[in-house]
Length: 220
Image 1 (cartoon, rainbow, N blue to C red):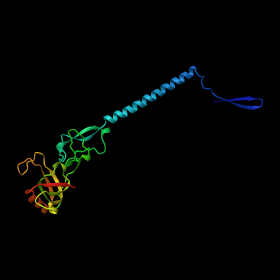
Image 2: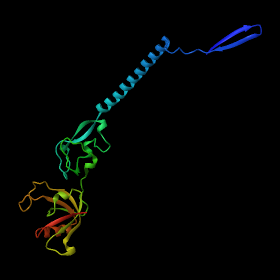
Image 3: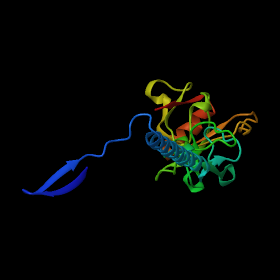
Image 4: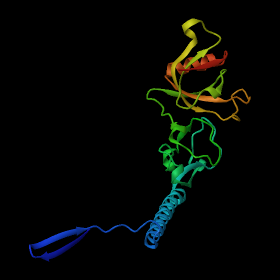
């Protein structure tokens, strides 16, 4: 809008006039359209570069993650030599993945973990501590050893040499350790012995009836 002031015999008179936009198809209008297109294109390119840079940084930026240095079997106590730190993209790390070796060393693997697999806090649990007032003995089980893990609470029962309630040898035994597949049992076979913590009187019953027949672990 343009303001114009004029004078006459009857005093001062003010008139207003508006600037008209360039006519369609005029050179000035074409130049304005070209400038707008160039500005829009520059903004689009800038945004694309910004988003691309953020995506690249998200992939390139890394944090340490605990991975298996070698295969870890279910039920094994995880040792320091079993794990190592590896740099992983931040975008691939979830809240449950372990970032410190101390988070998993000394714990019991709850599943089989292959070499180079990342380890989460859900894959391992605390190793058991011998309860006060209990004794630890090794037992050769007739039931599947693969069904128990260190830290499990089980009921030990005898299949022979007893009747009824007397067949329950230990009501609440704690699994302390599961022997390796190559563990040699007392009879010279390739038995897998399982260490249990239980009250002394229960341990005496287990040792007595173990010579007579099979003992089974019932997981609670």
